Image 1 (spheres, one colour):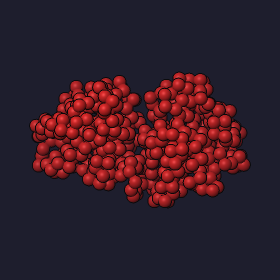
Image 2 (cartoon, one colour):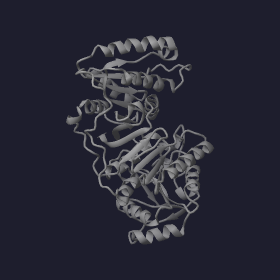
Image 3 (cartoon, helix red, strand yellow):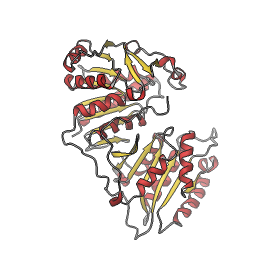
Length: 434
């Protein structure tokens, strides 16, 4: 039974929030395409941060209705911990879709990352967030730090003398939309306990900080429910041939390029098409055929195929063409007879969605992390069902992050030492910002 639904406005935010529940022992799935799920926690992304406000609101409402149809008992609306995005309209749409008696409890505090809510105001390392560099964000600039003003909401202080019960009563009295303070993890924990007392009408609204506390406060009925890290991936028996690990890097951020360079330096078969190779169908066919030939020459050994996007981005090159070309190429390799694929590593939500679409997968079930904030699991559904899968936001992580992911995927099922995420909070949210 799906007990908890998560809605986020971007894929990395959905993954971050889902990981908080994985760490607490919940069986968790990040769904990339609509489809059935047996997970206890189901996370959806609306990809709405860059949309116009009316479209963002519609997407949020649709996602919440989808979760209602799946039978979720509790709703978590993940918002950016620095207030980027269409918070007010998305939250109102979520409330309308959830219940006529919905109570939105808003607290984006994430003390481990320097985000606190004091007097209703979001502070980033002690400074009002609207007075930081985020005020100049090119997509969704943050111009207001006072959440009650931003959301037209009530405000409730979170006092040391409060019990969870008295805090819940004060929140209920100020419904339907209430901003609650949290300057530290103790206050955040008390708020989570109050949310539990408010029951299923309450919509929790926050970042990974509140999600981490609620993941423990709600507590999974069946204890740790990870998919086994020794589970086989979708690999055909190729008669003792080596296995291929596929790494797809579409991001142009310097961090991602350095991580890709480390994979190449470790001996990967590296392919980086030119813009012309991607745009022209015949040129792409020639380029990809030549690359497949190079991959075919590594039989008998474990190998890595690294696909990176070109730095040259012509106006004629649609942004979605790169992840789609790479995903189709990966799917051709995965579906090819006599080929073992140990897993796929993808940077960026666009790439993850493209791979899922090419394989007919509906999402991936997370069972742990390669490193903090880099979820690992298995694809669900389609021709990639059971394939081990790692996804990572483009602009964060150490230079060895991708090589660590590759090393983990290359382990045979009986050798896999990936441990489920520890039941503690890691500062992984909104990693590309200070």
